[in-house]
Length: 111
Image 1 (cartoon, helix red, strand yellow):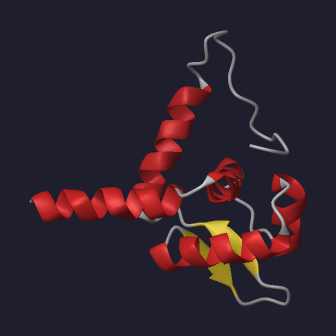
Image 2 (image 1 turned 90 degrees about the vertical axis):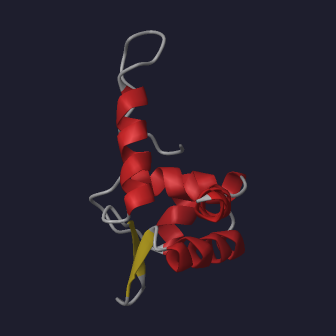
């Protein structure tokens, strides 16, 4: 049981990672219906292209992001993954429980 908990926390730490990985993940989570190119993610998040590429590799390896083999490749949050579903539910809950009582913006450019 203890090893299972440890691997879950390790998985979460690896997935959420540093600021740039979290910004990419959050942007994809806030736009779950859309698939995005690397260029679109660079523009939307302000994260440099090499970092977007590196962070996407990690998120794809975890199964949190899907990669579609179009030209150019596109990326989308994997809503079927258990951790991603919980993250999306969390975002939905906090969207409606801000201090001002107003929802968080759904289509903000930067997370």
